[in-house]
Image (spheres, rainbow, N blue to C red):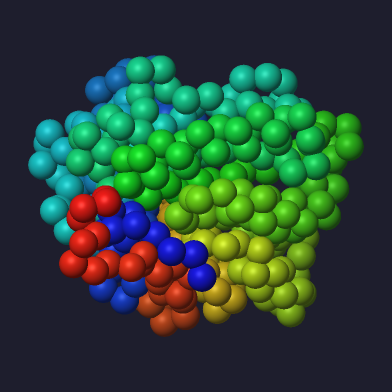
Length: 326
């Protein structure tokens, strides 16, 4: 079992609920959210519309989530300043730029300019989140991506703040032209990625579900793949929603949590339909009813089946002299 420092231990306690389960909401979308709002409302979306959407989401979801993930551009600072985040709710803040550099077949994650781990710790956040485009079978590209993970892991150790890494796989054009072709390779991509990423001193893996439910229907196979993912990950892991519909995500969360996951970090599966609602008043009603009901049902599910995060991590030794060498 991997040991963690006092600061990271405290951070993970703040990310989880009282059961040690991570029931978190993702609201750090930027470019994709702006496109969704523009398509849904039929008008150009400015910065304030982005901020308002995130503030509404934060105000309604944060009190029922163990933690909330926000970006520094439209969400994190604004939510703190507006007073919409309860003091008991953990705050993850993203560090990467939206999108990627390089080609669609060799994606490189870049960090936001003038933004770093020290600033995230300084603002009072609970954890740092890195989205990482990753293919373990692309040696040159994966090496560069792993260098970034290693650098941020060291920065987070120095600042004693948890690091949550979200590796996202992608198809390679003509090799995986059809969705079913990519679905065939995705399980091993996700499992190998977990093994490689968690070899670094990160603290939580935000993992993709290791199968596509549109093409894989064998329930025994789905459980087996999630158990393989659990073995591959040296740290607690949670399932991301990746834009699937809520019913599909609910099934993914149940299978993952029954196979060793420590919860979820749910984004669009919770709230994506809200981007089609033009009236802010009507949107809030949808968030306060349908979206909260979804979050509550996922939380109930995770509390029932998930593995507490501390089953994979333990505190380093603390005695009467610990502060002298901290």
